[in-house]
Length: 345
Image (spheres, rainbow, N blue to C red):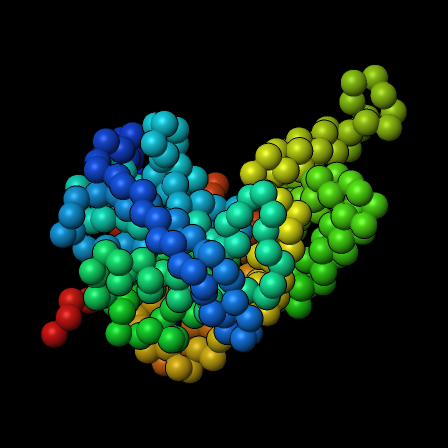
């Protein structure tokens, strides 16, 4: 159902009282061992473990927060007090205020870092794992799912299959289907990784695929402002932008295996959800410069959703990564979104 679209500048600031403190709220790790997880494809994951982390005070409304394929359950920090991947938004007195809500983070499957299974996994399968966590916690309905990138796809799959278990959605930089240009880029990345595996150099292939991916997550505008096309370090063949990408690739291999990357990358491209079957109220947030989930594509999703929906567009040069970089602007919208979550009748 079409809502009014609006563009918001990334210069919007979160008031100082909404800047989260390092969370000291209660947090617990959740682990569910399943002998078998039946998948949408008809195949199964055997001896499967679902890992999640719950922040906040028991009994508070639950907000599920999901990110991209490299995101983890540590949304607001780990047990060693290191920052989480969305700590800029989640914490005591933050836009997602742990004094008022609980936050649940999830590790996406496959989660075996040593030897990931490469059988097909859908966004529906990931959503089904969320249901298992809710059942384990005895929570019948989440207040909201805030999903960015792949996490937004999972949120849509959840709302489509289990509409009575979530009150509201916030979908950031994601849509009901993969954008064709993104499918093309990810296809190249997978071929790089598979070729490297065959050559016995899997981590090198994964790093190179990540380098390519980084050029799709950001925008030409940001790269032009950030990097110089001139050679650097006295070497006519060395460039600062290439050094940056090399560092990104090497960092990625520390937390991702080639097999797990292939499975999650394929899951993105298999994602298809009929938005006309989703009645859950939804706020959609796009980034002006996003090459993977362009505002025009998210407007189509907004128009086709069956429930109340609204699209806002961040005026950001950070492309698909705006959900990680534009936390001040996002904080304003998330704070408002949470305050407007509908209550059950």
